[in-house]
Amino acid sequence: MSRHFLPSPGRPLLFTVGHLSLQPELPFTLPTHTYGPLQLLYVCYRNRPTRHTLTFFAILGFAISFSGAFQIPFLLNHLHFTYFQLAASTSLFVFARFIAAPWVGKIVDTHGSRKPLMIASALLPIVAFGWAVSGSFYGILMTQFIAGIIWTGFEVFSFTFLAENTQPAERHRIFATKQVAWNFSSAAGALGGAAFATYFTSAAAVFWASCILRIFAVLFLLGLPIEQFATDRESKEEIASPEAA
Image (cartoon, rainbow, N blue to C red; front, side):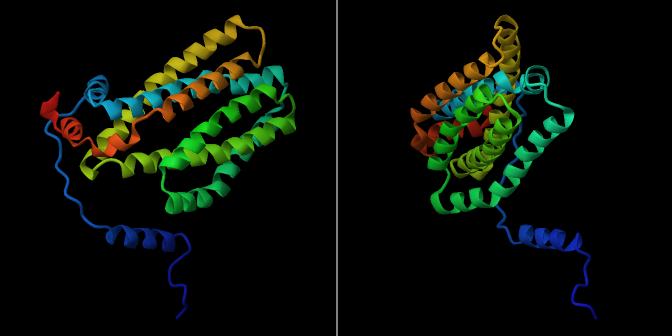
Protein backbone atom coordinates (compact mmCIF):
# COMPACT_ATOMS: atom_id res chain seq x y z
CA MET A 1 0.00 0.00 0.00
CA SER A 2 1.20 3.47 -0.75
CA ARG A 3 2.48 5.50 2.18
CA HIS A 4 0.53 8.52 0.95
CA PHE A 5 -2.93 7.09 1.54
CA LEU A 6 -4.55 10.54 1.61
CA PRO A 7 -4.56 13.07 -1.22
CA SER A 8 -2.49 16.20 -0.60
CA PRO A 9 -5.47 18.48 0.21
CA GLY A 10 -6.73 15.97 2.78
CA ARG A 11 -3.61 15.75 4.93
CA PRO A 12 -3.58 19.37 6.17
CA LEU A 13 -7.29 19.10 6.94
CA LEU A 14 -6.70 15.90 8.94
CA PHE A 15 -3.83 17.49 10.87
CA THR A 16 -5.96 20.57 11.60
CA VAL A 17 -8.84 18.49 12.95
CA GLY A 18 -6.40 16.46 15.05
CA HIS A 19 -4.83 19.62 16.46
CA LEU A 20 -8.21 21.08 17.37
CA SER A 21 -9.24 17.84 19.09
CA LEU A 22 -6.23 18.14 21.41
CA GLN A 23 -7.16 21.62 22.63
CA PRO A 24 -8.43 21.81 26.23
CA GLU A 25 -12.14 22.43 26.73
CA LEU A 26 -12.61 25.72 28.52
CA PRO A 27 -15.80 26.58 30.38
CA PHE A 28 -17.94 29.07 28.53
CA THR A 29 -21.31 30.48 29.50
CA LEU A 30 -23.46 31.86 26.74
CA PRO A 31 -24.68 35.41 27.45
CA THR A 32 -28.33 35.82 28.29
CA HIS A 33 -28.51 39.11 26.41
CA THR A 34 -27.07 40.24 23.10
CA TYR A 35 -25.80 43.79 22.71
CA GLY A 36 -26.11 45.87 19.58
CA PRO A 37 -22.98 47.58 18.21
CA LEU A 38 -23.50 50.91 19.98
CA GLN A 39 -24.56 49.28 23.24
CA LEU A 40 -21.52 47.02 23.08
CA LEU A 41 -19.26 50.03 22.69
CA TYR A 42 -20.94 51.75 25.63
CA VAL A 43 -20.53 48.74 27.94
CA CYS A 44 -16.83 48.30 27.12
CA TYR A 45 -16.25 52.06 27.28
CA ARG A 46 -17.09 51.95 30.99
CA ASN A 47 -13.90 49.95 31.62
CA ARG A 48 -10.97 52.38 31.65
CA PRO A 49 -8.15 50.14 30.31
CA THR A 50 -10.48 48.68 27.69
CA ARG A 51 -11.63 52.18 26.77
CA HIS A 52 -8.03 53.30 26.19
CA THR A 53 -7.20 50.24 24.11
CA LEU A 54 -10.30 50.59 21.94
CA THR A 55 -9.63 54.31 21.50
CA PHE A 56 -6.19 53.47 20.15
CA PHE A 57 -7.67 51.09 17.57
CA ALA A 58 -10.31 53.67 16.67
CA ILE A 59 -7.73 56.42 16.11
CA LEU A 60 -5.55 54.10 14.06
CA GLY A 61 -8.51 52.86 12.02
CA PHE A 62 -9.40 56.48 11.23
CA ALA A 63 -5.79 57.25 10.26
CA ILE A 64 -5.43 54.17 8.04
CA SER A 65 -8.68 54.70 6.15
CA PHE A 66 -7.97 58.43 5.80
CA SER A 67 -5.58 57.60 2.96
CA GLY A 68 -6.52 53.98 2.20
CA ALA A 69 -9.47 54.84 0.00
CA PHE A 70 -7.30 57.25 -1.99
CA GLN A 71 -4.54 54.80 -2.94
CA ILE A 72 -5.99 53.36 -6.15
CA PRO A 73 -7.10 56.75 -7.58
CA PHE A 74 -3.66 58.09 -6.65
CA LEU A 75 -1.89 55.33 -8.59
CA LEU A 76 -4.15 55.50 -11.65
CA ASN A 77 -4.80 59.25 -11.94
CA HIS A 78 -1.65 60.86 -10.53
CA LEU A 79 1.12 58.32 -11.11
CA HIS A 80 -0.60 57.01 -14.27
CA PHE A 81 -0.11 53.35 -13.45
CA THR A 82 -1.30 50.75 -15.89
CA TYR A 83 -3.64 48.07 -14.60
CA PHE A 84 -0.75 45.61 -14.69
CA GLN A 85 1.37 47.89 -12.50
CA LEU A 86 -1.54 48.31 -10.10
CA ALA A 87 -1.99 44.53 -9.89
CA ALA A 88 1.75 44.02 -9.45
CA SER A 89 1.93 46.43 -6.52
CA THR A 90 -1.04 44.74 -4.83
CA SER A 91 0.43 41.28 -5.46
CA LEU A 92 3.74 42.29 -3.89
CA PHE A 93 1.90 43.49 -0.78
CA VAL A 94 0.18 40.10 -0.47
CA PHE A 95 3.46 38.24 -1.14
CA ALA A 96 5.22 40.22 1.61
CA ARG A 97 2.49 39.26 4.06
CA PHE A 98 2.92 35.62 3.07
CA ILE A 99 6.68 35.48 3.64
CA ALA A 100 6.52 37.56 6.85
CA ALA A 101 3.92 35.40 8.61
CA PRO A 102 6.31 32.65 9.88
CA TRP A 103 8.78 35.19 11.23
CA VAL A 104 6.04 37.16 12.93
CA GLY A 105 4.81 33.98 14.60
CA LYS A 106 8.31 33.27 15.91
CA ILE A 107 8.52 36.77 17.34
CA VAL A 108 5.28 36.25 19.27
CA ASP A 109 6.51 32.91 20.59
CA THR A 110 9.81 34.42 21.69
CA HIS A 111 8.99 37.94 22.86
CA GLY A 112 5.24 37.96 23.51
CA SER A 113 2.94 40.51 21.93
CA ARG A 114 3.10 43.74 23.92
CA LYS A 115 6.45 45.16 22.79
CA PRO A 116 6.13 43.82 19.21
CA LEU A 117 2.70 45.48 18.99
CA MET A 118 4.19 48.81 20.01
CA ILE A 119 7.03 48.45 17.50
CA ALA A 120 4.70 47.44 14.66
CA SER A 121 2.37 50.33 15.47
CA ALA A 122 5.32 52.73 15.51
CA LEU A 123 6.29 51.53 12.02
CA LEU A 124 2.85 52.12 10.49
CA PRO A 125 3.52 55.83 9.77
CA ILE A 126 6.37 54.68 7.52
CA VAL A 127 3.79 53.21 5.12
CA ALA A 128 1.96 56.52 4.68
CA PHE A 129 5.32 58.31 4.41
CA GLY A 130 6.34 55.94 1.62
CA TRP A 131 3.15 56.66 -0.30
CA ALA A 132 3.70 60.40 0.13
CA VAL A 133 7.26 60.47 -1.21
CA SER A 134 7.13 57.65 -3.79
CA GLY A 135 6.60 59.02 -7.26
CA SER A 136 7.59 55.99 -9.30
CA PHE A 137 6.55 52.41 -9.89
CA TYR A 138 9.57 50.97 -8.07
CA GLY A 139 9.09 53.31 -5.15
CA ILE A 140 5.51 52.10 -4.72
CA LEU A 141 6.69 48.48 -4.99
CA MET A 142 9.18 49.01 -2.19
CA THR A 143 6.52 50.74 -0.08
CA GLN A 144 4.03 47.93 -0.66
CA PHE A 145 6.58 45.27 0.26
CA ILE A 146 7.44 47.03 3.52
CA ALA A 147 3.75 47.66 4.19
CA GLY A 148 2.95 43.96 3.81
CA ILE A 149 5.53 43.01 6.43
CA ILE A 150 4.45 45.71 8.88
CA TRP A 151 0.75 44.94 8.48
CA THR A 152 1.28 41.24 9.07
CA GLY A 153 3.09 42.02 12.30
CA PHE A 154 0.50 44.52 13.46
CA GLU A 155 -2.48 42.23 12.83
CA VAL A 156 -0.90 39.20 14.51
CA PHE A 157 0.49 41.17 17.45
CA SER A 158 -2.79 42.99 18.10
CA PHE A 159 -4.73 39.72 17.94
CA THR A 160 -2.43 37.90 20.33
CA PHE A 161 -2.25 40.92 22.64
CA LEU A 162 -6.01 41.03 23.05
CA ALA A 163 -6.18 37.24 23.41
CA GLU A 164 -3.46 37.09 26.05
CA ASN A 165 -4.90 39.89 28.16
CA THR A 166 -8.49 38.74 28.39
CA GLN A 167 -10.14 35.71 29.95
CA PRO A 168 -11.52 33.09 27.51
CA ALA A 169 -15.12 33.93 28.39
CA GLU A 170 -14.53 37.62 27.56
CA ARG A 171 -12.55 37.37 24.34
CA HIS A 172 -15.52 37.22 21.99
CA ARG A 173 -16.79 40.52 23.39
CA ILE A 174 -13.42 42.25 23.30
CA PHE A 175 -12.75 41.20 19.70
CA ALA A 176 -16.26 42.21 18.64
CA THR A 177 -15.95 45.62 20.30
CA LYS A 178 -12.53 46.21 18.77
CA GLN A 179 -13.97 45.43 15.33
CA VAL A 180 -16.98 47.70 15.84
CA ALA A 181 -14.74 50.59 16.96
CA TRP A 182 -12.36 49.99 14.02
CA ASN A 183 -15.18 49.86 11.45
CA PHE A 184 -16.92 53.00 12.68
CA SER A 185 -13.67 54.96 12.74
CA SER A 186 -12.61 53.57 9.36
CA ALA A 187 -15.82 54.79 7.78
CA ALA A 188 -15.29 58.21 9.31
CA GLY A 189 -11.65 58.22 8.20
CA ALA A 190 -12.55 57.40 4.60
CA LEU A 191 -15.08 60.24 4.49
CA GLY A 192 -12.60 62.60 6.14
CA GLY A 193 -9.88 61.64 3.66
CA ALA A 194 -12.23 62.19 0.72
CA ALA A 195 -13.16 65.65 1.99
CA PHE A 196 -9.48 66.45 2.64
CA ALA A 197 -8.40 65.33 -0.84
CA THR A 198 -11.19 67.40 -2.39
CA TYR A 199 -9.92 70.69 -0.96
CA PHE A 200 -6.15 70.12 -1.26
CA THR A 201 -4.54 70.24 -4.68
CA SER A 202 -1.44 68.26 -3.65
CA ALA A 203 -1.98 64.59 -4.41
CA ALA A 204 0.37 63.49 -1.61
CA ALA A 205 -1.23 65.73 1.04
CA VAL A 206 -3.70 63.07 2.13
CA PHE A 207 -0.84 60.64 2.78
CA TRP A 208 1.07 63.22 4.82
CA ALA A 209 -2.08 63.81 6.87
CA SER A 210 -2.49 60.06 7.38
CA CYS A 211 1.13 59.81 8.48
CA ILE A 212 0.58 62.51 11.13
CA LEU A 213 -2.60 60.81 12.35
CA ARG A 214 -0.79 57.49 12.65
CA ILE A 215 1.96 59.13 14.69
CA PHE A 216 -0.72 60.53 17.00
CA ALA A 217 -2.15 57.02 17.42
CA VAL A 218 1.31 55.69 18.30
CA LEU A 219 1.83 58.43 20.88
CA PHE A 220 -1.55 57.54 22.37
CA LEU A 221 -0.54 53.86 22.52
CA LEU A 222 2.60 54.67 24.49
CA GLY A 223 0.43 56.06 27.29
CA LEU A 224 -1.88 53.05 27.54
CA PRO A 225 -2.12 51.41 30.99
CA ILE A 226 -1.67 47.98 29.41
CA GLU A 227 -0.94 46.25 32.71
CA GLN A 228 -4.41 47.11 34.00
CA PHE A 229 -6.03 45.57 30.94
CA ALA A 230 -5.51 42.11 32.40
CA THR A 231 -5.70 42.86 36.13
CA ASP A 232 -8.69 45.15 36.55
CA ARG A 233 -10.90 42.24 37.61
CA GLU A 234 -13.86 44.28 38.79
CA SER A 235 -14.18 46.06 35.46
CA LYS A 236 -13.74 42.78 33.60
CA GLU A 237 -16.65 41.28 35.46
CA GLU A 238 -18.67 44.36 34.57
CA ILE A 239 -17.93 43.80 30.88
CA ALA A 240 -18.63 40.08 30.99
CA SER A 241 -21.95 40.39 32.81
CA PRO A 242 -24.96 41.46 30.69
CA GLU A 243 -26.64 42.83 33.80
CA ALA A 244 -23.84 45.38 34.20
CA ALA A 245 -25.31 47.55 31.47
